[in-house]
Image 1: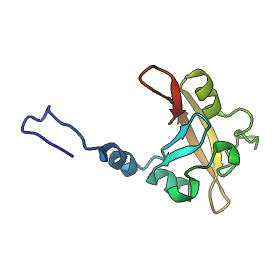
Image 2: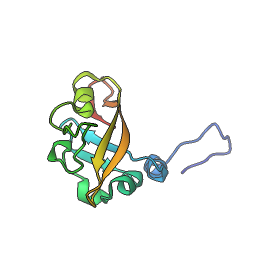
Image 3: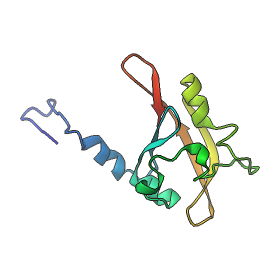
Image 4: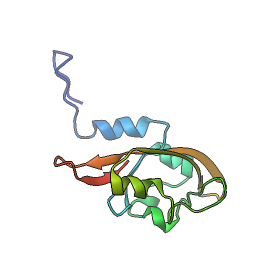
Amino acid sequence: MIQRDDPTDFVPDPQFFRTVVDALPDGVYVTDRQRRIVYWNRGAEQIAGYAAAEVLGSRCSDDLLMHVDDQGNRLCRTGCPLSATLADGEVRSADLYLQHRDGHRVPVRVRVAPLRDPQGRITGAV
């Protein structure tokens, strides 16, 4: 991090935001438009039991995490909040379950927000 004499003149180095997000206890992951996981923070590793190296490049629809609703319906193929946000750009929240690497279900509250390029086009989601 670069810091100047004037505290309002703060310019973070390129690693700053990754460091901040990795320090969060919340799971954060980023996908591209094809729902490929391109970033997976340490909080996500703790919650799901998968290291970043195991999930990067995987798609939500690969059923690695097997997101399901209260009735056990798999959401990655139908009813996926991530897919809906990628399609219309709306922020969504959902209470669901993911499957931990060890096989047990973990209740999670998912909040999905679109990521946009400078022209406003959706390039992925977080």
